[in-house]
Amino acid sequence: MVITNWQFAAGANNAAWPILDSGGTALDAVEAAINHVELLTDEFYVGYGGSPNTLGETTLDAMIMWGPSHDAGAVGCLKRVKKAVSVARHVMERTQHTLLVGDDATRFAVEMGFVETSLTNGASLKAWTEWAVKNEKSDAWQPERRGGGQKPEGHDTVGSMAIDRQGNICVGCSTNGRTFKLPGRVGDSPIAGAGAYCDNDVGAAIATGDGDVMMRFLPTYHTVELMRQGASPEEAAREAIRRITGKGYNFDGAIVALNKNGQHGSVRIGWEGEEFGYGVQRGGESNQFSVEAM
Ligand code: SD4
Image 1 (cartoon, rainbow, N blue to C red):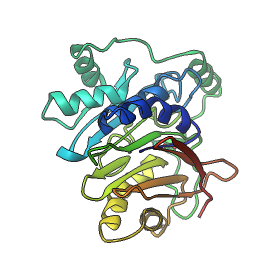
Image 2 (cartoon, helix red, strand yellow; image 1 turned 90 degrees about the horizontal axis):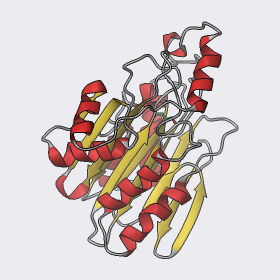
Image 3 (cartoon, protein in one colour; image 1 turned 60 degrees about the vertical axis):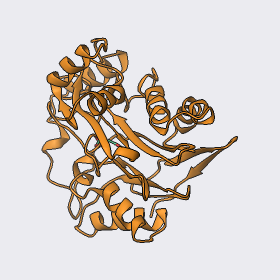
């Protein structure tokens, strides 16, 4: 089975399903699902052509984690390379490292054969020029969102998790982060246990939302550990979110969790007036789940 969050779930799961259906690995399936979203031309918050930083540049965060070996690879603030999760997979498979960042991650990607290209398109350029003429400071300079405060705009991180015929679990995620972020900003997505986490003995979890807050709590690690102790996927995700609100944070976010038996659940907070959900493809069946705010 394969699960992907947000409105692009069906397309992503469609890209992954033939791999799983023909006996392929969850690793290949998750990479295919995420690549599908990274290359969508009209998706602003994942991949190229979206969420410019204060200098107008789009940079990418992604990770992939493979259950059988508990190995992970990630890139943070990756520049000028489109398939961030595939670069993350190269970090995992070709090196002993877990996380490479910035221009050095780009150099690594080029050494691995990836094409270097601009990540700017009409949409990201328009968003940046409209913002830049206002001469405002990035909202990253606002006070912390504890007990109130202004939440950052925008959303979407693609997170996918799959279980293959061998019972192996893989999880991954990819995003361009946060609009008008400060140059050099790395969010939760490339941090194991923050943006995504899996343990072959237990299950997996993916996160989306205000990464600057969420990464302080390692919510996907927390969710998987609670499932290890017997919590259902939804209970585990709820408790992980509660840990964050319990410290007074006002944020938008969601966690989708999957246990190794194929049970899944999700909790979201905030995003008033927005739809959040996830898609599940299992056997020949594909279902979409909408998640209400807690
Ligand atoms: C980030 N978590 O970089 C990502 C963005 C996101 O819903 O998922 N927004 O903070």
